[in-house]
Length: 175
Ligand code: NI
Image (cartoon, rainbow, N blue to C red; front, side):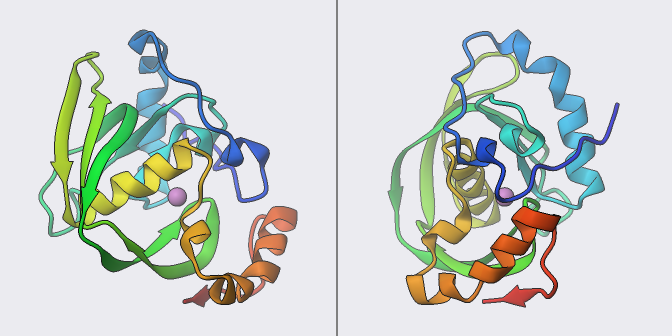
């Protein structure tokens, strides 16, 4: 297994809508490395394009939090419907030192395939629902900071340039 380098804000692959996975077998060789990378970086989710793979899948593990959920692999996830709204602070391994409170739907109905190729439809809420929405965004080329108001986004513009140029901002910020 290997810890893979995390692709940072500014790399075009993070603005790419990732390739649909037709053959589950193509995902399997990357799964262990994806989990190892996520654990090394203390992330709760990691989308394939965050390690440079143009593939529509993500790994998620929030088992270290108070929500007792085991590790998951979500392949070709799509949000079918959603309800409610709530605020939660988010961060991203591809956007270091920045955190921001974002409003998103409270519950999402997601269709995805698991690592055995079985298609599943499940409702997610709480932290797991939040992480899944963040990862589905990544897989569609979207960052959580895209949901900020223009006024708040302006507060991190300089830092984003620094991340794109050097991999990290000079100072962190929580919005
Ligand atoms: Ni992220």
